[in-house]
Amino acid sequence: MTPPRHEAENLSILVAAERDAQVDLLLRELRRSASHVVHLYPVIDRLPAEHDLILADISLPLLDQLPWVPGEASSALILLLPEDGQHSLKKLRNCCPDAVLHRPFQRSAIQTSLVLARSQFQFIRRLRSRISRLDENIKAIRDIERAKTIVMDMRRIGEDEAYAYLRSQAMERRTTVALFASHFIDSHQLLG
Image 1 (cartoon, helix red, strand yellow):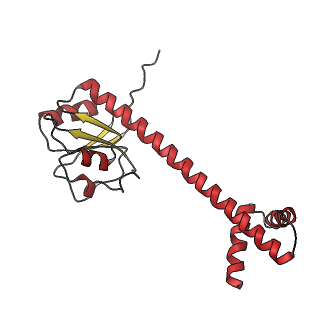
Image 2 (cartoon, rainbow, N blue to C red):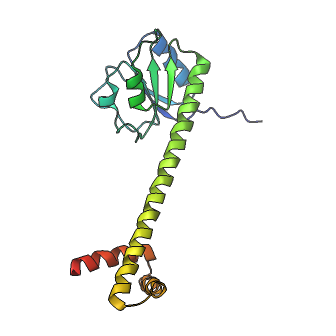
Image 3 (cartoon, rainbow, N blue to C red):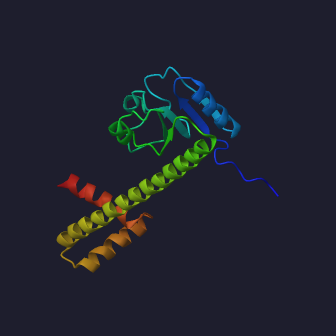
């Protein structure tokens, strides 16, 4: 029987935090998971975006250093919180982390945060993709409706005939009705 695959296996992980005993424990635990772990301190102006997972100390000026606009992350983000619990909830909310990890770090909590952050990040990425496709569909519907109106006015025909015309023109050009409608609207606007 093969052993279960570790959740953090083959991940590229960046740890942006000042080195101390707790961060050393964190780094050891992350390296045990067969991940590629990079420790970065002092932190540069902008954190690199090519990592799967970024663990960053909340005490850093993160909003300026994140390589993305908050809410449009390209990596999963785990914020490292201080032991005394003294941190800005506003900053925590504004960074939009996928998980948090409280000091003192515990091995089980580290693994749990990794799994949670990756899962949350992938879920949000899927939602963004769906929203993007829905936006494209809405735009396509609007373009088709606008193109139908233009054809109806130009040819003095009904809605069904106008759609049939757009569809036949799209088929002749081997493209979608939505794409043809978009180009049709653009050319109609150019011609006045």
